[in-house]
Image (cartoon, rainbow, N blue to C red):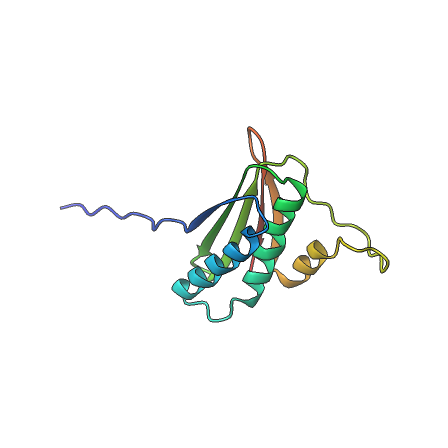
Length: 130
């Protein structure tokens, strides 16, 4: 008798680009961190808020997709935010007079690793390993 093993589904949230999207993404992260047994979801909520807000502000159209993946050997959580924009995130030099541009440097200081993966047709995935 053979036994088939299936990978669990990756938790995914599909959002319309709107001012409500970051709050919806935070609730999604809290729920799925709890399901994964991750007690502290503060960094996850902060990261997903920033990435979804950036997708909404800088792309403004289309869908935003949030995924949560678990790297089982290391028990590390990986967040991915997909959007339909082709422009890649830019880490700006520190400017104390600027009214924006602090989110990505903040994220970089809080996560283990991050990156951007362009998609074949259009868009990109920004990911962070927590």
